[in-house]
Image (cartoon, rainbow, N blue to C red; front, top):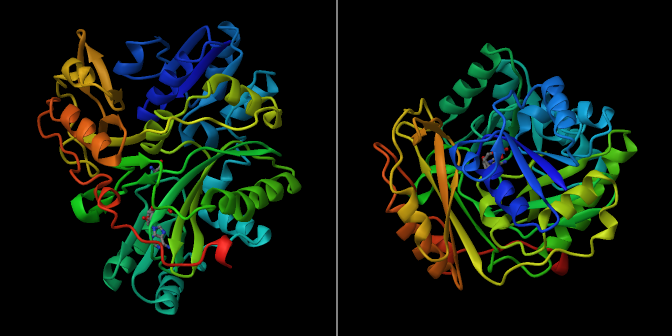
Length: 430
Ligand code: AMP
Ligand code: GLY
């Protein structure tokens, strides 16, 4: 099988690694990739967001499968164009990807499918925003109703900050979704689907805030780990029965079947599980942690999803080990990251037993690795316990040098200390 992975980030580097390890995959290509991906497979410096460009590349390479990493190509209709050309594609059509591209659309689908989520209101004016903020009270949750790479959400107890975010979204011509605040630990669960059948991956937890102790602004994600030893038994089944299957059925019923990966972002609140958001793609950096444990060859699974025969895959198999991913970010991320700086020590970092280095915002300049984005790379540590996986990841990342680079030091720390508690009901107890 010949596969092309679209996208430039760490998630794509993890997908590339998993596909290279699949004995049924003979060739892996990537577009545009990054410095790490370029070191392992053939990269094509083309615009991966352009449906015509990607279709032409896929035909020229006689590909058997295209795997779409980020949201931008999905929202541009790259999957639609590939489908029309008869090329198997892992990733939903533009219409199905609305589940991520519009938070208001996702709320409508959840309401129709009876999926538990935060109460929400859509606002298009300051007056509407004010009314919604007063209705729900503090802490306030204000979301830009569009693609914002995880950075369009403000969660704050400061009413003025909430108002200001809404006003800024309106000024940019957007609408906002204002929600009730959800307490409790968050879970990211990726569910594969071919439009009918669903197949879950292992749950992970992401660290959205920039700084230790969950302080600072929201980012695309500063770290992740999997599996979640503290998760209630039956959690994955509950998400499948109450969230994934109803949403997949509702999308099929609407004539816009969702094939690809439905990223279920969940909060396990004191009143039970609620959906925070859907994404129409794998999460970053959760994918780096989740795929580190997957022992089932990935290519065949993604091809089955692309070809509408996911029911032929019984279940996925996982290493009993734990994976912890720690992201190294550029100076001034997430505002205006400083890029163009040398990244050193990558070889030494990768030699640590159980560690792997997955590039994100990197490019090669004169044969040297240079930072090119906000999130530069993630180091994944695999170990027998969270403590061991954390120690491996942190030992490895300490060997990497990047001027102004920073990472969180507390990824998976509370879980390792047994401090995460789920207080609400789960399906088993309802
Ligand atoms: P989203 O882009 O919707 O995933 O939101 C980004 C992050 O903001 C989430 O991962 C949560 O940490 C936080 N968040 C979003 N919605 C809520 C909510 N209703 N209550 C509490 N936190 C939220
Ligand atoms: N890690 C969050 C995301 O991929 O959206």
